Image (cartoon, rainbow, N blue to C red; front, side):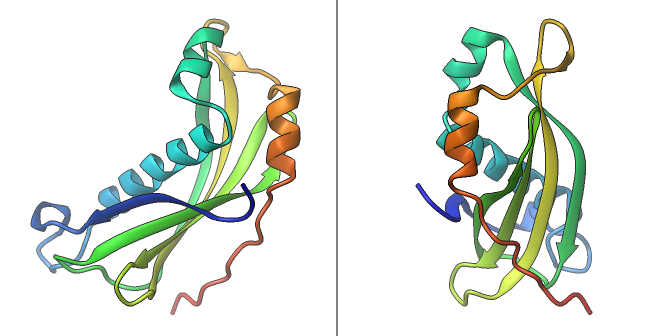
Length: 146
């Protein structure tokens, strides 16, 4: 695996939208969150892997840029990758697009800590998975937010 991978695909439904007719912030965040878990699973952090080790991930920072409106019936797709891999954390970057037009709708950058669920504290990323992740870093896509 190298570069960005597809991590989410769905539609904007009426219940995702506010009174102005476009998708609300809480649904962008929910889709980006689902995309993050797909990204981590593709990196080897499957549900079974983390359950066996009693580990997980905890977000510590998220930045979302909203670039274009997503009205009802818009098909959306998210691609994600890793910008940075630290000792105990990863910085991910996701880009959400209208999957029919390719128009960039939003981006999300997040810092997430690998977490020992029993000790309730951060823990080092496993060396084998960390080295594989470092080999697949992506470049951030800059977007114009006007």
